[in-house]
Image (cartoon, rainbow, N blue to C red; front, side, top):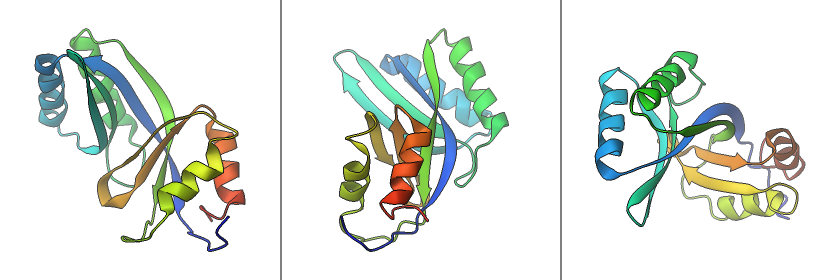
Length: 146
């Protein structure tokens, strides 16, 4: 493993995962935004006639219970079933650093299920795993967070 310490700062955030057709997704995004909530990280993947959506909302560097409540309300109002779970947001990424995703995945995949890794606002990386506590320990042991 690369011995260079990346010194990324972890934050625990809430991720909402759901599926929705195009029209419903459009309304959800519009309703969240109209209530003054920003998207910190988003990934949308087209699956046949539906979209698999993962979103993290609120300010770029901290979990915001009010923003999360807005998302819950909007999803409930839209009649969309969703899963809410804790994810790790890694902050402090130096733009252009080579091998960061490789180091993150290498540190995790043998010991936790990696559900998703994607970029968010301010070059933050969102890591969705089966066991956040174990993942944090592994990231620290591998000099990714510090």
